[in-house]
Each structure stands twice: as structure tokens, then as C-alpha cells.
Length: 367
Image (tube, rainbow, N blue to C red; front, side, top):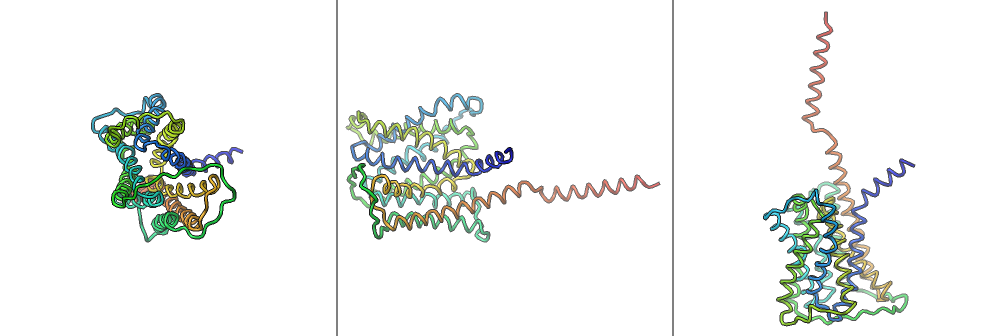
């Protein structure tokens, strides 16, 4: 029984980052449908970003204050500037560009471009030497191929439909589709810019966590500073429209609360934790899973049609994700083994010392 419990504990610790990232994508996929309904009923996206992170910061503050009181490092001016940039890339600038691009492009286009984040993060991690890539080794080749295969799967879901598979039943839940202005200059620029900012944010997490090793406090700071940055952006975007800031709709309030508690608090914390344990590439490789989950939820819950392109893309995403995780897992095993083995110099020193001791001992035994 003791050995079984020990094996279960080891397996849980090994799979915990994977489970946390699946939960992150589940929450994000569910939020997608809530946001679609709320935005189509008039909720301003920039106001939503601001209020959502205010809620996230308030939800995290008591835990950060009480649990990290002794471990939280002292805030300096340099550290505050870094967290300000961290918040700008993860919240204030990125999310507002993301939702602004949704007003000028189609959801399919946005879904395709957002899932460029794993590839961009992978390239940035290699550039900053946060990720090792040796194409001569199987694990390095698997990581490179897995990234490209997963991106191909996402592009298949977004751009190729194919024959439709009818829904199994008619759903009583119907979401109103919002109207999108077509501007294929502003839209793609904003969308790609948000992807680049997000990729830099994911890459930045490791170094920021080393200098500020208090994840709850970091997430609280990022939410509150990001909310202030978003408020400045929103005041410019919705100027002369003070009514936009006030909403009595239960749907809008529920959307803000759910987004704040789940996406800006819980998901934020899980992303920081997984990024610290596994690195930025591991975290972003689960992003395509959200696209797959949205397609599955739309079919089984909303009764929407399922296209063969979505099935092909979903299978491709799973294959790519498996290849990358296999490569990452083998890399970690090699690193752990190398860390356990003593350096050659130490081994040689021990051998020389043993030889000297043996020679001294034999000399002392001579008459």
C-alpha cells in the first residue's frame, strides 16, 4: 500500500503541470461562449478587460498577502518597472489589442493567428536559450516537428471546413453572432501584434519569477497594474460614452466575475506555476487545445455542425502536442540524469585520491 501511494504521488507530481494546463484551456474554452453572448448583447470588450482584472486582483490579494508575507521580496523601483512591463504585455496591451482585432476580422481568422503563439514562443525561447533544440537528437526533432504539426492542425480547423456532420440533436441554447466590421489592414496588424506581445510575455515569465519568486503576489500585481493600464486605454477608446462603464445586465456581471475569478486569477496562477516548472514552450503548446475544445463544445452542447476539417485538425493537434511533450519529457530525463552524475573532474580526483590512499596504506604496512 505504501509503495502504491508513493507511485501515485510520483505520477501526480509528474502529470500535475499537464493537468493544470488542460484545466486552463477548459476554462478559457468555456469563457469563449460566455464572452460571445455578452459581447453580442452590448458589453464593451475594453471595459470587460478592465473590470475582469480588477476582480482578479481583488480575488488574489488576500491569499497573496497572507500566504507570501514572509517570502515576498521587497518591491524596488527596478522590480516595479519590470512588473509594469510584464503586466502591459500580459494584460493591458495584449488583451485590448486582441479584442480590438475581433472588431475588424472574423473569429476564424483570429483563432488561426492566436494559435501562432506556441510557434513564436518556441522561436523566442530558442533565441534566448531558454529551450534547447538539437535536431540531431530524437527529442529535439520531436519538439520541432510537434510545434509545426500542432500549428498545421489549428490552421486546418480555422481555414478548412470540408463536409459537415450534422448535429445529433437540436440545442435549446443559441448564441447571437455579433457583426464584424471588415478591415483587413487594422485587424491582422492588431491580431499579430497581440500574438507577439503574448509570446514575449510567456518568455519573460521565467526571468521575472527568478527575481520575484512570489507567484501569488506577482499575479496580484499583474492583475491590478494591468487593470489600471486597461482603464487608461479604455478611457481613450470609449471617450464621451460614460454609460459604457455602467451595466446592470446580470449576463455582463456574471461574465466579468467568471472571467476575473477563473481566467485572471486561477488560470493566471496555474500558467505562472507551470511556466516556472516546465518553461514557456510547454505552457503555450496547450493553446491549440482551446480551439479543439471550442469545436467539441459547440457540437455537443450548442448543437452546431461539426466539419470534417475540424476532426482532421483536432487529430493533428493531438499528434503535434504528443510529439512536443514526448520531446520535452526526454529532455528532462536527460537533464536529471546528467545532474545526478558527478562531473568527470570530480570522478578523476576521487580516483587519484583513492590511488594515493592505497599507496600510502601499502607503504605503511611494509616492515
